[in-house]
Length: 373
Image (cartoon, rainbow, N blue to C red; front, side, top):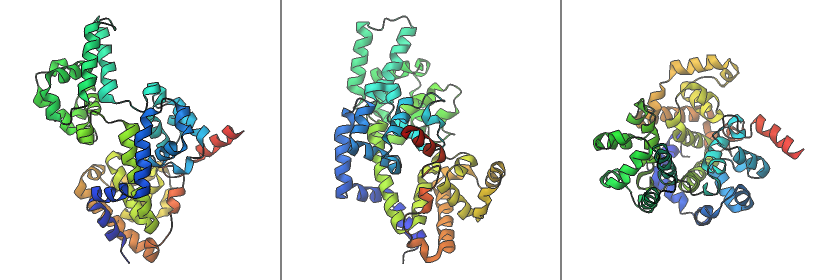
């Protein structure tokens, strides 16, 4: 019987190959093709939830398959959007709903929600705002011509070097983000773009002017590579997430420890404090197992738990592949030791049906009752 550690290593040794294997499975390929061919045609929340095949794909991509039946609830999530801190999605404990609202942001982008790209429509909107502030009329023929030229050509840019080499496109983008004073410093902007925004210590994130981080977010070559200028969360993001969710589910059907390790690996880069771990049953299980912390500690005061985790782990290590690899190697070994043969033979984990990150939290259940009433 293959151990938890070995199973995890076989998948992650070449994660792209593992994902490609999943993507090429007939059922996954069919559903992905349908989604890719139809999501951009959706212009409203009602259209979205009415197409069960599209909607189910999107829900699975965000780890919400268990809530695909609750369409009235999800309409409420989408209608409130993600911007207002008091929106429905922002009030829910489970942050998967907030991510869903961000990916399908009908509240902010209306009929363009499924095709909206920061690098395209978002930058044009910012450029128009800058022009308006400078006293240029919104319908000025020369502003309009620049907008059309930008939209027509930006989608063909596939690298940082190509972006910086096109003076017209680069100047347009820099003006849109209020960064024209750095137009001549392309070496600096190359570093801004190359560092991206995922790492809180990246060059863009260390600047006092938040416009640099916003610029790097819009033109996120670091995260999206050649798709940076055409990336939309509703399209490319969902497809990538669907494959990853499927991969993790398949692994979990054989060994729940492997699924936990894969999930933690996926989330690790975004973890900056112990409360993010404690708010997620699956993440907390990985950490407690790896550090030898008894499961009973979950009943202790939350601040005491957070302090203990802060003392025993370095969150910066989670962003270093080698250190993360060692941490997960320890987890998989400890998981095997604690669970024995059951580690490789149990069905879908109870962890993936519990509140917070993977299950239906109490606030969701209460809201569903109100919607049905």
